[in-house]
Amino acid sequence: MCAHAHRSSRWFQEAGHNLPPAHGPDRSETKTSMTIANRIAASFAVLLAALTAFASPTLAAQPTPWALGLQEAATEVMEHIHWFETFTLIIITAIVIFVLVLMVYVCWRFSEKNNKTPSKTTHHAMLEVVWTVVPIIILVVIAVPSFRLLYEEAVVPPADMTIKATGYQWYWGYEYPDHDDIDFLAIMLQDDERLERMEATGGSEEDFPRLLAVDNDMVVPVNTTIRLLVTAGDVLHAFAMPAFGVKMDAVPGRINETWFRAEREGVYYGQCSELCGTDHAFMPIAIRVVSQDQFDAWASVAADDLGAANEMLAQMIRDGETANELAQN
Ligand SMILES: [Cu+2]
Image (cartoon, rainbow, N blue to C red; front, side):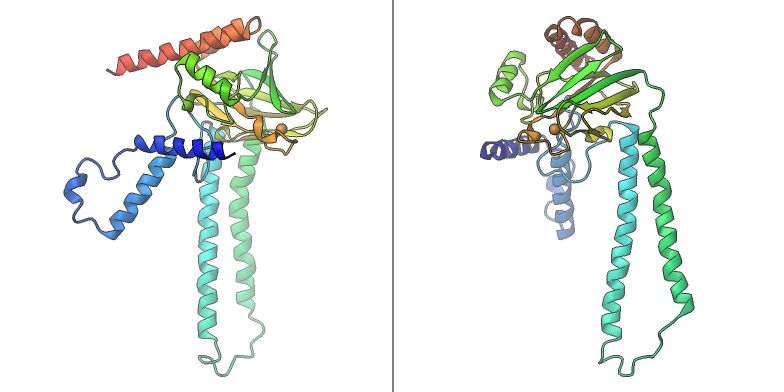
């Protein structure tokens, strides 16, 4: 695991090289008058930039060293989860500050020194109504968007296609019943395999992240509603894709249903989220979101020759990126 820690810190540093200047182009002029507040703000900007520097198009979302908060959303559901997280964070922060201030005030105001003759009051009807009703109102205010979000996650809208994901000790299997029964396994790449692929494709470490990259990505078209059936072949697993707001138990002998509609192309990484044995940490989930044309081309070949389909897809993505770069220049 030492090797991993070392590599992680290298990623972090490499990402740091791409940081935008924290203060914009006129950094040198303002340097002398930089106040402490500016310095603190600058530190936060650098930290924030370091944390978000991984969000390049080829690397849409994945766990990163030192990350805080939730991954960037790639679906509407995840955007709503982000909103709900911020919303509840504001409420809980206000409550914590209120209680803290109240406690400090009470400790000071009603100490023996400041309050020599304590009041004998034991009931105060108005106060008791308020401290019962206000928490009820707060809970209702939280419950309404919470249930709306749960409903949005749980009820699968009319789907454009179906994919079945099966958890095994310790890899995932994917089936595409609507597309000639494409059926393959996705197994985590070992370090030597990652090196081989980097050499073969001219890709970087970012293209094959350690403990996340797999041999065969799940491929889905962008802006397509996908019904995901989740089950397991041996023990309990869980299919989790943070950027999509998806987490579903994979239970042997039972099929669970969830859905997602990815709105941005790229590769997204998740992990098994139910402790399932020795290699629980080594059965990542990689979903490659591509354009409809790219998906159609991949799907037409994948049932017969998955390797060829994946190579063709990788080439199409590289060609697309080159075309984009040319268009920008
Ligand atoms: Cu598992």
